[in-house]
Image (cartoon, rainbow, N blue to C red):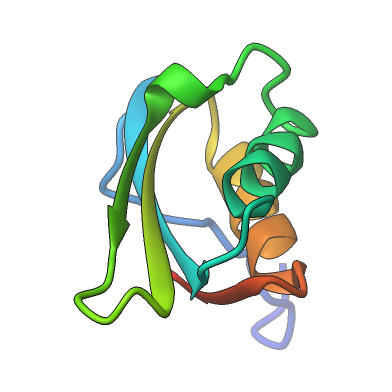
Length: 95
């Protein structure tokens, strides 16, 4: 290898896979918000269902926060879930 060739990038993570990982998803209160988030996560983990969601409304009722416990087997899978959620038009924030 010459000094100008680059080593392949290694993605580092402190998360050990597989794991149950909590993802917080926030958006404006809407009747279909939880079902839309469930469907989005199911694209990457078909067994995900609503019993793995904790819901909280904001004090004024305008926003809804969902904490979704997702089972992930790899960093790429977790990244794909985050990308899908952040791209969803009903989602304001994903943590």
